[in-house]
Length: 400
Ligand code: FAD
Ligand code: UDP
Image (cartoon, rainbow, N blue to C red; front, top):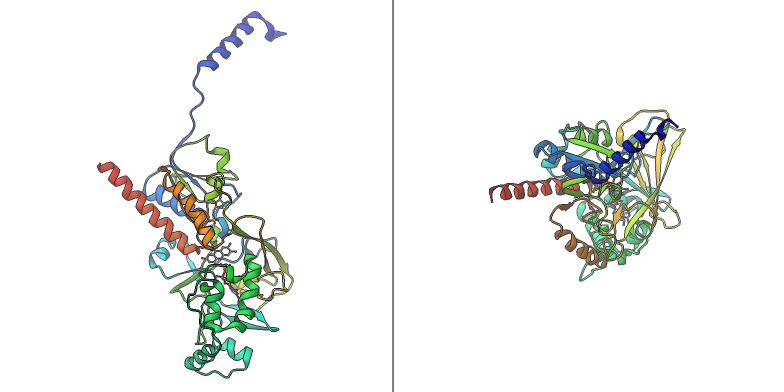
């Protein structure tokens, strides 16, 4: 009854009239909006803020930083990788120096065994693998090379993931190690995939059983998430997690957008969907100290539904009476993890890339935004190079 006086009614009407003519509240302004807090987004944000002096807003639709490299302690206190095993390796001193500003390292050389014919044998295929599987008694590189050459099937034009392997080791080893694993992992036969996919795994005639031969192989001493937290800890960087680009794209004002999500999503899938392969991760804690002799065991047998099992304590050096492992089940549905390297997918990507190049105030960086099957170090290198180009462009515009 009190609010119903004629004075109150007049005041309310005046407030309404003012609201109608007043400008809408200004959209908050940032120099840069970065979509995605994985390697691509975090490196870009760090450079733009710390070197470029820009005010940067970083958003990620997930409730955490670090993208697919995210690690966390599970209920048993074991540091696990939520999106499967991530091992840092690179030949670039520049990339190591850059990341070393945000983390110390635990030296670690990755070794993988494959479950083949009821045995665990080293991959990449090397002399030891051949000796264990075939009782071949090969003593030198030359003997191993001759053993493989006898089996290899020459392929005139190596184009597919089948060609690469068959031309190096022959069909028997191809079937034992590559065909089933690849069919499971990609939902495609190796003959349908670009040669770059299986070419990631070399063949050796020596007894080097390391998965990678890069000059630098290590794990961030406190984990990947801690490294990302240090990278994003800058007064010019603001972070909003659990925030999708779609929810803020019209609510925030920015001069530059750095987009690290799927490029086809950015353009509303206007040319159709780019295929990405997904995985389901089954995390388990086992009440035994160790589950397997190395960090990763691959299961190339198509009858086994998972592709590999990771035991994290091997990677991190953590000590505990129990152990945590992850089984990977490939899947067509789910978060996009792997661009699928095939000529027709690359052609579709090129159409999206042409649209991207025509967007002057947006840069596309990272594995999903540039549709490249990149390792972490390659994404860091791509982001550092993108930042350098942006800086140069700004300097030229200032001079012009
Ligand atoms: P991502 O890490 O995918 O980050 C992109 C981020 O953007 C995500 O967090 C996502 O939530 C966010 N995002 C996307 N769209 C939107 C949107 N619309 N709004 C808001 N946020 C959005 N590399 C190695 O070097 N060594 C390894 O051992 C290794 N193992 C791997 C194992 C697996 C199972 C997988 C899948 C990858 C592995 N990689 C490995 C590759 C590595 O994960 C990538 O190179 C790297 O994480 C890519 O970083 P990115 O920033 O490009 O993408
Ligand atoms: N691959 C395989 N058998 C193996 C290991 C790898 O067939 O034991 C093939 C498979 O197609 C896989 C690709 O080689 O997707 C690249 O392997 P990598 O270990 O680099 O895969 P990622 O760690 O990126 O999943």
